[in-house]
Amino acid sequence: MAKFDASKMTEADRDVLHAAARSLLAGQKDTEPEIPAEVKEFLEKTGMTIEAKKPAVMAAVDPADATPDPADVQLGGIGPQATPIKAPAIIHEGTKRELKDFSIAHAIGILSMGQNYPYLADAGLEIEELKSQRARSREPMSAEKQLLLAERQQQLKDLNLGSEVAGGFFIPTEVNNEMIQKLRGQEIWMQMGVDYLPDSPKYQEWDKEGRDPLVYWPGDTPTSDLTASDMDFGQITLTLHPMACLVPIRLNLIKFARINVEAEVRSRIVKSMAIEQTKVGLRGTGAKQPLGLFLDPAMAPYTTPSVGKPDFDDLLDAISAIKQRDGVVSPAQSAWVMPQEYLNIFQKSKTGTAEYSYIVDLTDMPAERILGLPVFTSSQIRTDLGVGSDESRMMLVSDAKTIMLADGGQTEITILKELYALQFKIGVLASKEIDFGIKREADLQFLTGLTTS
Image: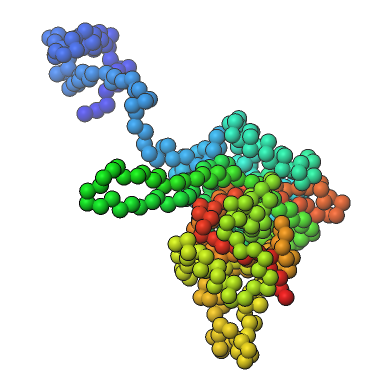
């Protein structure tokens, strides 16, 4: 049928068409409208048809009952930067790099040199992440975030840093996990396999074992009620303590050797934090830092005092003491913790015939094992101090899971520009929060008052 052009109709034809339209509009909603005879004649002559359709009705939708498309509610980012996740994991199209490729060296260069950073064209990923962090920092903070910010500011005051903070950011999750893995390989607690609690809150409480319930023999016909004995539980309160590591980096190193500085920054941070984490787990004072196992007053009943120069009899006595408390000592879960100097004493121990006490062929000597149990050594244990408040010690841990290590999560990196400006350096401040606790003191035995001769 040819296309109908209403502009070429005569006045009489238009009147007929209008009459047809009025008759349709005047019809009832649920009945078929009646078309006048002259309109029918006109339609037959022109070959046209008229169809009446019900108008679309827009229903009101209750947002509480609506079910959105799952693809529309998956957001990436926080706050105003939140956008639907419908694109690949590429963050910066110019460099095609993902979040796991985040470079600390690029971030340091951007924050310290700004537009003068020579590798700015390659740092699109880092620029986007820093912009995102800055935008989030401008959002209203909750009371918990305000408390955390106050603690961070106090931490900077304790380090005498004043207001010399040029900018801050959080290491992306992928990079942070990489640093945690490196930390795990360099400090004794994670190597030992303690009960590691990642992403811990600021405060948390755990039940801790105390006295065991008593068992009675009532006989077939008890003459009285059984005596109840509740299993005794104590309480462990873990409070995260912030620790910080400050690494000065030369500006020329950042400018001309950005790949090297990346490895240097991470290795220095990890090494320093690993040493300190080992130290506070052993000798922490509890003042602004965790209370270490050696200084925990609850360990007094499980201590062998004034040992002097240790020998294998002392080690066997420690194993026996734990077993007398119904503890289990096995290579799968137990370990010795001692300074390297004392491990060396045991490895060189000889019988009267100049044979080594615990092995005949030194080529078959097990690596870092004494009496079949693994040995973890630390330079942070005092040596050759004799008896005193911070005396030389070693310990036997019958169950590594009895030691709890709470980790607050992300390692925060802050760039300090002015503190080292006169030395043509910047400072990289890394900080995280941890705490230690013991579930069952009877699973440990200390040997104290050690000497090397």
